[in-house]
Image 1: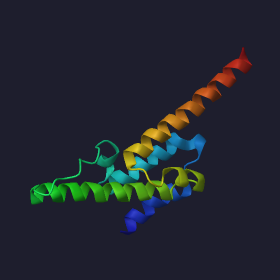
Image 2 (image 1 turned 60 degrees about the vertical axis):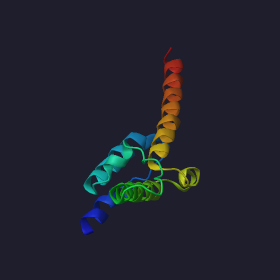
Image 3 (image 1 turned 45 degrees about the vertical axis):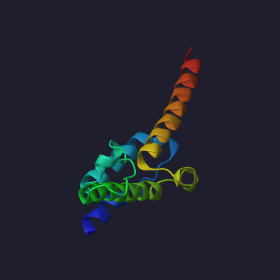
Image 4 (image 1 turned 90 degrees about the vertical axis):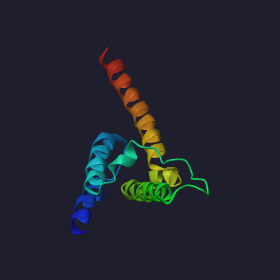
Length: 119
């Protein structure tokens, strides 16, 4: 567990703010990979199981849900308070999608403004 805490400290020291999204995301992937939870970034949570699902299916669903919840907590803990409030009720994939859209728009606007000043 001590190694988990030391890697998580990377995210604590570099909280997500708008200009550092790519660095933050790279660090997040490192931390989740070390904790064997990086698959939640790419794999959606399976649909909610029906009552007659096999024990193995129920266990796999619960394991994925637990890993997603833990990854979401790591993500939220490494964001500014404003971003935490905006994303606290989202799953991991929804958060990443929203953050990518949000910060890509900001980067495009910034590039446009720089180009406009140059020309």
